[in-house]
Length: 401
Image 1 (cartoon, helix red, strand yellow):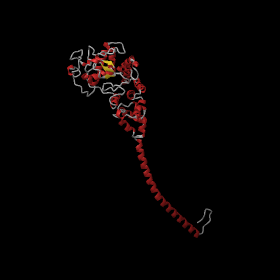
Image 2 (tube, helix red, strand yellow):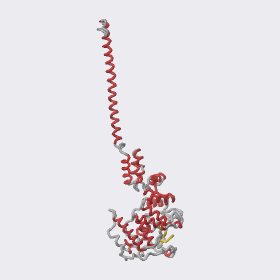
Image 3 (cartoon, helix red, strand yellow):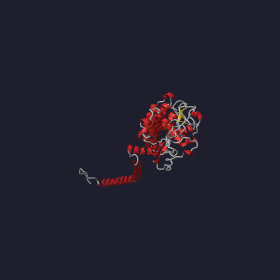
Image 4 (cartoon, rainbow, N blue to C red):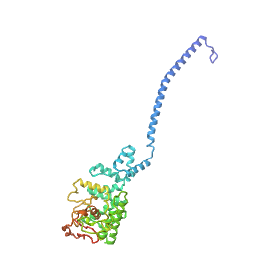
């Protein structure tokens, strides 16, 4: 064996060198084979596990986290507008952090239905107040009106309640316009001298234009009696008939109104022993022409009215300090000062915040109970509403308390 320079090794030295080289190759090969054999298997197992874990994680997040926020907000808007109770909305918000954050988006809160934030009087608390205020701050007109009525009549926070109702009225919400009209007619939250009849008539006219039946009926009575506006009996009677027609059309448009076919066409005045006033159209006259409308089922009360009714019922049926409640069961309003509401001029046993509430309560209940009381007939207090009725209908007047 020769080197690169041409020198030759001794034979014995060459044999030993070859043996040493062969031994090193075997040792190196064996070491390299043993160590990678164990390490490679462990590496493959770990690699498979990591691949499975990463696949599972990727599959869980792609289904929801990849959705854009606009699409999720649109879905939540549909949910809040169709929820049947607050629990439906709250359970979705508690599902995950993302839904909780997007559920409080102003667009979702503004489109929520009244059932989404319906609060019962017996469950009223600071947290319920804050929950309702979330929707009001987001611009939900229903929440603004409901919270405004609760603050004005129940919590006796007159300024804040009136401002919330005004916020809803600016958005052309008819119930808020009508409630502000009642406040102006009665001077609620102030003294008797704070009444603004012309402002009440203007608010009623706006609410009636938007289709509010009670406001249209109230406006008809104002025109018929010359209350806050120049008297026009013909126009007032036309508005009253129009209000009754709208009321009847609203009931008949419901799929399950349950109204018999001819009960609203004729009525029997002898069915009520205490009823001493006949319509101007005779015994078989159509109640559609009456100031009090047809014999239709009671309309569903607004959630704010139901809350106020429950609120005062849990407090003994009184607003305290000698203040009275409106006798119409579907109203719930209370006096803000003594002798604010007007009494029935025939019996003097019931009180009403407006002529609309008087008309509804007369049809539903008071027509059977009203009996003449001479002390109320003789006591007319100079407001132009004397005891008795109008010559053309079965209208029972109210007098100032």
